[in-house]
Image 1 (tube, one colour):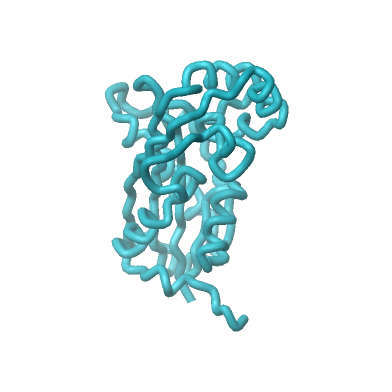
Image 2 (cartoon, rainbow, N blue to C red):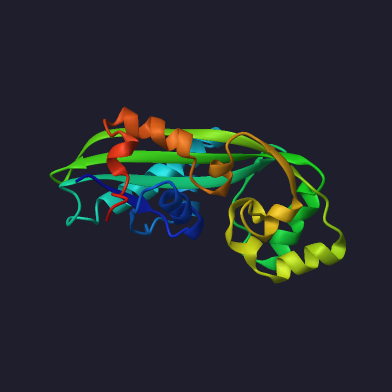
Length: 211
């Protein structure tokens, strides 16, 4: 049986896949995202940066799973928010999260989600497909007390763009234009196409409901 290996520690991505009928094997990459981005040519487009990060994670994990490499697909993911032509990843600190919200509150921005799928057989990568999707997010304008409470929760510090759609941050998103699953972290429509590109039908990966 072909196994799907999720190269991400994101609980949101894991939750989406499980809800969609797949129980992935989780392996977290050791990729230095800043180093990967810094090594790219200075004129690299925003979508290409996000895809390059997703691919780096998939490649890193694919090299470290000998027990699964006989028959599996490895999925690498990366998401960043494009605001005023600049990509924003995880803020990590309350100060940066506050700065991010100062620029995006009451406005819209594009959440770019990149995926890379590697098909492994007998320890070798035999096929690869990578692409990204873009979803426009229209943000509300939380009042100062609401923003203080949201930042104090810690949720926005470790997520791309300093917000979530499926958590506390969902209160401050007015609407989206595009795929909600990609905003949460892993786009099911995009992933299905990439799996098809490497010769894997998504239904092959569904768990047996009788198990």
